[in-house]
Length: 269
Image (cartoon, rainbow, N blue to C red):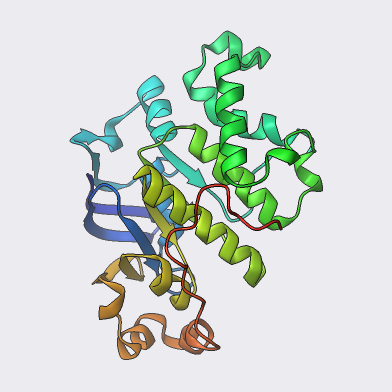
């Protein structure tokens, strides 16, 4: 179980996350919603320890994540895989090598420096690519792929870390509607088929309601809503998003995922 207890992250005098507390049970698909600047990205980066909390604690299965240092911290970052909005791939490297980067924390230092990948890690990486229908792209440079393909490579990289939790920071913000569905379906498959907890920042309420089984709403660094998607009424959403409400609530509702897509069924994009 993930426990966030009184978490505060300050940058100068501004608290990006302000005395935030909640718990996430294993296997959940939790959407973190809120207007721009609400503290969503800082929250996820704090859980992964890319940002050091100012106050409070983060516990995972009873381990105080905020106290980890050195090797233990590197191991935690492998267990809490991050997926970023801008993919964070190395464009000049091929797809397979980018995915194998997810295995670095499990390798001895001499192997990581020389990038001599064990055969079992290569097999694991190819299996991850196959699950998202992009194994045929293994030898291509990452910067030659479409945005949707790059994000699926990033998800495959996260999967080979064999994480306990995936932290997805606006993973579909730069994608078109078709690739948005492909990527969200990929995260849903990971959650349902592997039982990996997913904590995902989302700007679209339609997507959050369609894919997530729980929503955490943030405003000014604080949790102001925590419940099932059905509990998030339009009135509550408008209070949560304020001036951005029309943007995130407008347009036709997002197509709901048709059950859990089978592994390896992602559309080509």
